[in-house]
Image 1 (cartoon, rainbow, N blue to C red):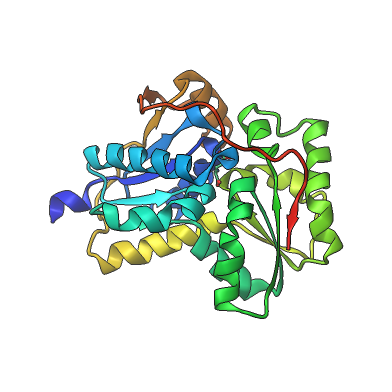
Image 2: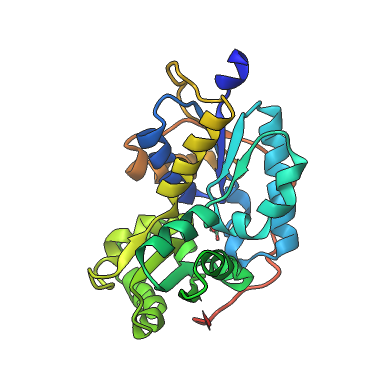
Length: 281
Ligand code: DGL
């Protein structure tokens, strides 16, 4: 048992979005060792089909199994929406997604809930289902935001264009008078400074990252898997360019991490994409 308690928690995303979850892990579970994987060769996930996402997630989890993780946090809403249920029973460690913790937090805050997410997550309706299962009276509006992830990964957070795009995506939600806004993609918390200049301060902002780590803490305790000694340094691995990831991450980590390259089977062609703002009622 001692050995497994000392194993790392695996965290994965398509790119730097999962660093928002990593930050919460550092805050809430500072004693845990973390293995962070970013599937940068195949991002963005949000334009991919369910079949592709499921395949990618299986490959990542198989690799994480080889790395002896004790738990995996899908720091990716798209994977949580499209693959979590299917893969949960296929692996021996607990796997947590971000959607249920985010939905639970949102219903505590409001009844007119806007969700910004990747097109794939919006289309899956995963947030609407999770929110309305908890509170059938809650109203949910979801907007797919295909331009956000490329802008963040290209380090264009502070471009004037990024703010224009954010205004365009948020306008239909603000027109519905939302009282709560969920970051339905882990990348979007990186845009908080921009989003806060557009959304009125009365709208509560929900970052599921904080709540998935609360859920992970409970699960580790329940399963007797909590680590009590000092953590090892976080191990970073990517499927794409390790240098690009390291340099981009610096602004959130405060240092350029050393990043391993991992090759997973690669399929680079997205099967669908949305060009326009589409509000899913
Ligand atoms: N950050 C991920 C999410 O929460 C994936 C974004 C993407 O690659 O499109 O959905």
